[in-house]
Image (cartoon, rainbow, N blue to C red):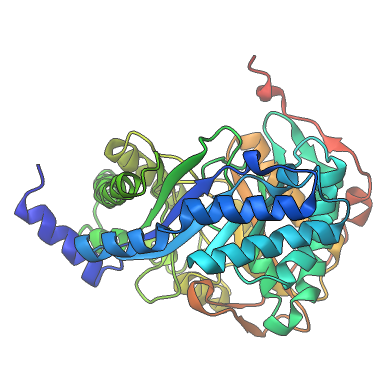
Length: 454
């Protein structure tokens, strides 16, 4: 039973501490849309998505208004398009036409983003999957709301280094194709190791083939709530620190559970998962880095940062799983540089480097996220950064990702402005030494020994 105190407490989190439901994401299977005729396939995709999602935005707005809970984004994820387009798409332009169809239906139903322009190639690439990957620069430069993701590795299969090499080239090409918008296309493109099937957050959301025909996934976020709670236990021991984070994560997740159940009932779509991630925004007071500082660090990136982030991530998960029986997606703490005011300050102060961020990804929920680097960075260097991150995910049996933005025409010391939730970022230096001979070897890095669990 919810009492008056809990109502007042939740209201305070929303009005003063930036608590929000970051997204309601409607996952839609497109497997029944497959056709060998491209025009028929495009019609099938548009019709299926429109019919499933036409009430999503209105329903989200109604729930937000009735419960007084901000719901920032309404989004759609679909079955990886490399699978859906394989029979009809004979070249890169054909796949880009599917991206444009996704973009049109996303605009028509009013969602912020649509994810699933994706390929899952952790062990190898089909012809269709390679075509989709090569079409990404064209697709993202001719659409506004489409997000793309590629899974390059897993603990079970190893790392597809041919795809890693290709993605370094594709990211650089996407940056050039969208250079008039400060290479914004790369902000809608992410590569994964161990990508989850039920992630509601962009740019990595897609509707896994193991999912139902339609599903509602909700992502909550409350870095400001956690920071405010920790202010009350400043200087106390780690036991009390952990308990405070855990209890706060429980409360935040209950809000997401409520919204998910309401959206599920009103849309007549099964409830999937709550992703209880701490996803920051550029707003002051809504920062994961500020939580780390509240724990006792001068800046994110100072010695002790990885330990503090590990503690935070673990307690968020422990609190969340007690609040909902269906926790999934990524769940934990995100560390996107451009979307977190505290991270930006740490980079500007010289406390946070690319190498320290990589160390932090060993214990956070995603990986190297929304990091701007010089536009003249070599494709092989980007592939090397990706390979390092895939290895962390593979060996540690966790999801890791890279969303990196080589900003065309800009270099270290300059700043790039993306706007909205994507924020702005100082361009960070990259290790200048070459890994080209390593990347050019080709083939696959095998799965680690501990992957054999059959």
